[in-house]
Image (tube, rainbow, N blue to C red; front, top):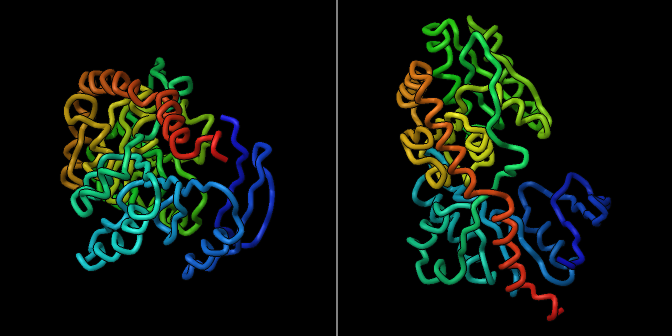
Length: 330
């Protein structure tokens, strides 16, 4: 679009590098005092700013855009006081100071609208996350002797790994032709250690498979699956994993958390369930036992994914960038 772009981020140490030809600056951050790092960035950076998150900033420049990745203060066990502190300390500042907040889901808009109705309607607009339909599209699945359930996510607690691992052992014992496949990253060694320790002690661990695939081979990973589970517990926007699985024509089981409710219509293009062991087990059993339902849900999911094409996402973002950061008003 003709803008000069630089990237500024938290880091373990100060650094400067380039990414696709654009300068990138790292600022050594203290995890317990991130606001001081943000202040340092603010004092360094000139010109317009697009804030990549609501979570860390406490000050937003006038004529700026801020991105909301979803409601993150819905942690299990959080008290009303915790939740109130989160939106009073972070969300309110963004709503008051920024010109615009782009949310990736309607869950954030609805929560903000309930708490700050006037500000939310003025400031919040929704651009759901996207899927690149040139990469992710239905393709012929190779015949396999087993039904494969795919978990294509981080092992972080909010992504539902702890919930899924509760239902796996009894299901593997019940269905000899069932296997679970984890496509997981290696960014958090502690989570990997927990995963391998759990897998090692399971009686049917030969049917608990895993890999650490690069993004460019993820279409092949989805293609080999029969069912994809997105069992988020909290802090979920419009999940890229969910959209990719839908675009590939897979039968998706997702929890009714965050922006997943903007993607899955229960019984039409997937199964939308309460995040509990009982409901996840029930949904998996249903899809394992009904292969035709897997095909029907997958076909509807692929049709739904067309509404989230990356080209539409780009067009919507261009509209707001031109509005808030017009190039003729440097």
